[in-house]
Image (cartoon, rainbow, N blue to C red):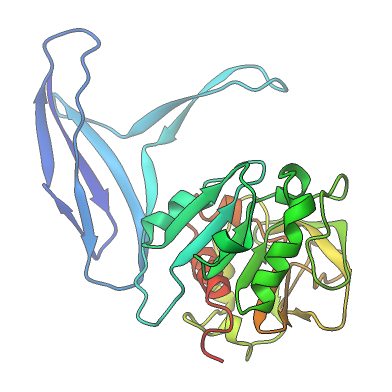
Length: 300
């Protein structure tokens, strides 16, 4: 079987080589083709589509099997395409990140792809000596529900913030918390926004998190995947500043999706925004907002 494979992209992307030719002589034969994709734009997003040509016929579908306990197994054809995103930091951002893994997500590897230095901790004790090596600590989804050592090590994380560090806590569920994640009063609720295209209000557009290193606008909330976020706090200490408001259709505005406060010399952030879905989906606005969280306070 003779053919060729190529990638097709939006304007502004360069692909090298333009295509690969192949000749398969055996049944079930496989071959890997590596393309280099680049863009001259510093911040650029788009789509790439794989197209296979066999005897003059173009094939551009991927075969996916859906097999979950709650549905009958199904085989579905999707377009063989993926999102591609290039981000370049033209301003200073923190680089050394400790990531305390919770129930599991792909954020550490995605941050590494962007050039951050990320160390992942799964069971280790989070000691003051360890934390001296980092500028930012991020807890993965449901870390306070699953990372047992936080019952004793939370005090070390708060001391890290007091000394000038940044602690970003992603969503946790209501029950079985090993520690209170916040230095101040914070009550987690079941509040969530499940409509991925629901309207968003920027409550404090002048705040540094909305401006550094990226200027966040309502356009950055376009093209989100599956939901906005979940398990938002619905009560918090007045020291917290709510940065975003959002709600599903016919629901009241919720202001607990992204809360920030200073804690002595450092910054504490609690967010129920579903970055764990948006970053793997290549949502440009979510990447920009997450990088801004990592950089919180750096230009103040």
